[in-house]
Length: 77
Image 1 (tube, rainbow, N blue to C red):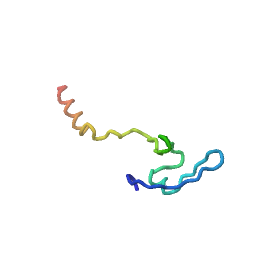
Image 2: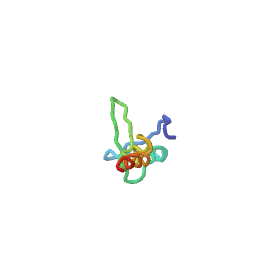
Image 3: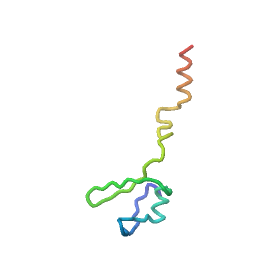
Image 4: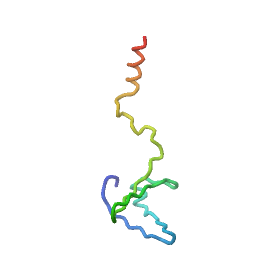
């Protein structure tokens, strides 16, 4: 379901509480205690999860890190 546009209804309850339907929770891969951001532009609101960790988020962006380290270390000799 990731990457697909879909509409899932939820009902606003007392004290502004909103329960996300199971389909939305699984599509966003949310777990209890996760934090989400609601981006509001006009009358459109977008909900997105806040990353739990940024560890590994850039893995592979700059190529093979191990090869880079080995190449750098070879210049020390």
